[in-house]
Image (tube, rainbow, N blue to C red; front, side):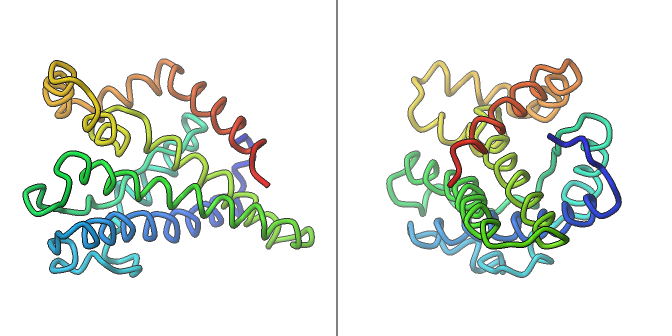
Length: 203
């Protein structure tokens, strides 16, 4: 799936990351705003401006390195802050804020799949192909129930208290867990398999 790592592919991937993560983070902020918390808006994060969301190391350099090493992009933008005490529906409100980001990536992948039908072969087709694949990858990666990924926030809202306590304990080590799973091939194989399954379902 990520076998072609030419210079043009990396450029398309970087453009995709900038666009997709900006929308992803803005949707977190918008969901929080709708649910009654203005923290993100007050901090300038209710914006599509990439400079508000992108971290040079974790958003740009990290996905390039992990694509080259593991064939799977691992990346993170600057987290959107929110005040859980100001959000409606408590834990379920936090889950909705978390879900807004990865769902935006799924919507972007669907839009890309519709647009690629009318794109001729060439740079536009290649860009849309990259755009679709990476947005599906971002969707899948972010809904994994591993803290601090968005999926863990969704799971937390519905999990029994012992599971919530366990998730709180492992959250400081979440990124190390993710890298360990990637290095062992467990996460890479899962992401690639799920990615291909969803790509087949797109229009």
